[in-house]
Each structure stands twice: as C-alpha cells, then as structure tokens.
Amino acid sequence: MANRGERYIILIFLIFLFVLSACTSTKFDLYEGKSLNIAVIGEPPQVREKEVNFNKILFDDLNKVDLEDYDAVFVMRENLYQASESHYADIYSNSPIPFFFISTTSHIPFTNKDIEYGESWGWSPGNSYAVGVHKSNEEDTLKSWGFGLYNDKKTNEHIEEVYSIIFMTIEELDS
Image 1 (cartoon, rainbow, N blue to C red):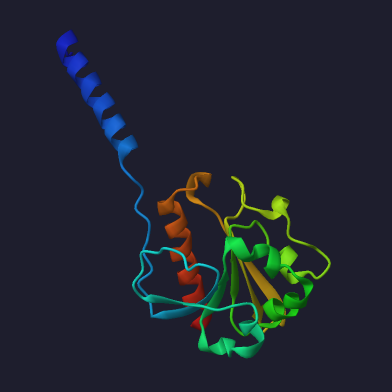
Image 2: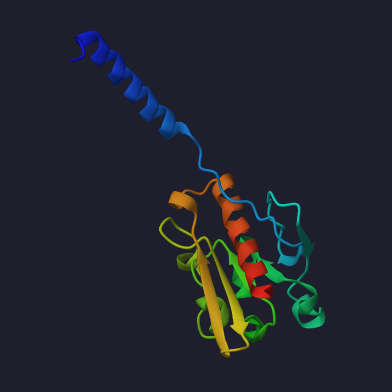
C-alpha cells in the first residue's frame, strides 16, 4: 500500500495529465486532393490549402460565364441578400456544379423563389455555418449539405476546417 506522500504525487501527476490533455488543440484534416477552381461571389476566404484557386465573379457572370469551368461557386456572407433574389433560384437549383452559401443556416432562401433571406437565416451557434446545393443528374433531385463549426465556436481555425470539409465534398462529387 502506497504511503501518503506517494498518493499525493500520483494525484498531482494525474491532475497534470488531465490539464495537459485538455489544453491540446484539435487537429483538423487538411484537403490534399486534386486542384480545385472555385468561383467566388464576394471576397475569397482565407484557407490553408494551396490546391484551391479562387476566381472572383459577379452575379451578372452567372448567366455569362461557363460555370462548368469551375468545380463550385461560393457565395460569401456579404452577398447573401442579393443571392436570395428569386431570379437566381433556378441557376442554383439547375447548375451542373455545386453552390455553397457561407455563413447561413439553410439553402431554402436561395432555392425557393418565395422565401427571402433575412437575419433569421444567418449563422448562429447550433446551426450550419455553410450550406451547399447541387442538382443530382442521376436522381434528378436537389442534394443539399450543411456544415457546422466545431463545438459551435466561430474561430478562424474552425472556419478553415469547414472549408477543408467543403473541398473534400466537392472532390467527391467529381469522382
């Protein structure tokens, strides 16, 4: 049986291990797939991946640019109100490539002509941080995704992780 001093040292050691394990950061996977070419309406996001190229476009370009030159389109937070205008809904719903809406909880105000985007659709903890839509040619349905932030905390690291997951999703669609 251990004496009182040995028990004290063991207890201190266990507390130290617990504190040390609580302080380690979470390691998120980095996208390391094929090179992606993504159109962005708004300011391109800061990401860790070097395999991703962003090209800024305008809403007017959606009808003029061949979207198949891109792997996806990102619509950034500052453009969500305009993105929800009803005349864009068919573009998102019938596009040959996926659209991702950043800092919103649902694709509904973008794919449903009768619903407008408002503050209630903006990101809040417990909801998706980004959503994506893509028309499935095999099933002739609109597929959607929601991407949440780790532990519902809006940090640069967690946002970068969401982008990495989105990039992986884009690559899976091309497979």
